[in-house]
Image (cartoon, rainbow, N blue to C red; front, side, top):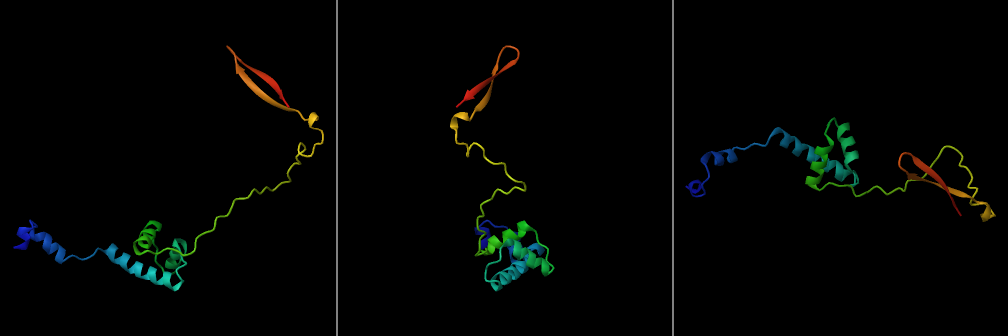
Length: 131
C-alpha cells in the first residue's frame, strides 16, 4: 500500500531488504578496521607510506588509491608532516674563483654583448662594448 502511494516498485523494496554488501565492500570494511587499529596503536603518526608497509607486513597488498580513499573516508591522517627542506647547490668539483669580484681596478674590466641584426639575406653580428 505504501509502495503504491510512493510509486516504488515492489522489487525495489525486496532488493533493499535482502541486500548484501559486495565482496569489495566487505574487504574494505575489514581493511579499514585493521587500518584504524594500526593507526591508533602508533599514536596517529603513521601516514600512507608507513600504513601501506605495515599492511604489507601482514600480507595485505593494497593499492595506493584504495588506501588513500579508505584513509579519507575514516579521517585517518598523520599528525606529523614533512618539513620543507630547502634544496642546496652541491657540486663535485672545485669552483672557479670570481676574478671580477676581487678586482681592484674597475676601469680594466671589459664586458661584451653580441647582438644580431637581421638584414636582407644574412644576419650581421655586431659587438658592443658595455662599461
